Image 1: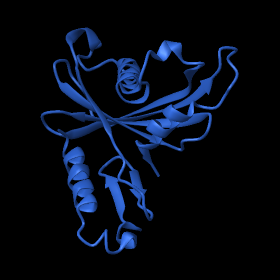
Image 2: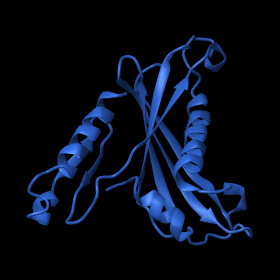
Image 3: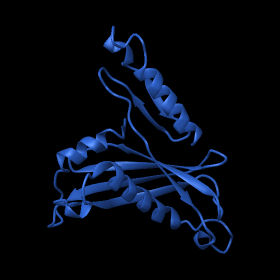
Image 4: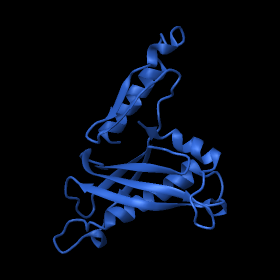
Length: 185
């Protein structure tokens, strides 16, 4: 597990188990939680629960590399899609996501490459949501080398929920509520 994820779990445990919270609910207010090296953070407010972070491991292979022997840049976008779909099916949609009255479409995607990745390295992708709105959201990816626990890259996608006519529409309330559990500020 990446070092930042361990730090989050420790902070969440400290916040949830804080002895003075029941006597003084404002004790949680104003606590800042940050994912190191990602630029993502959340400042808690009264009655706000700590957020979740989705985590998925990806194995890189020789087929993912280019002529220089490092991972081809476009593979990161494939991996973002794999991790995003896994997050949707495991955490957001209780049934078949193809039975929804709409779909998430990608408006934009970006990737910041911080360190080279090579074949056979195991990567851990972390997902959090940010700027969640009634019809759209951003997904932020942090990519760590699993063994060395080094941040290898950061990515972002902006998603819009559209109806079957491909017009932006409100995200179903049950899914929106699940997304908000992963939201950073």
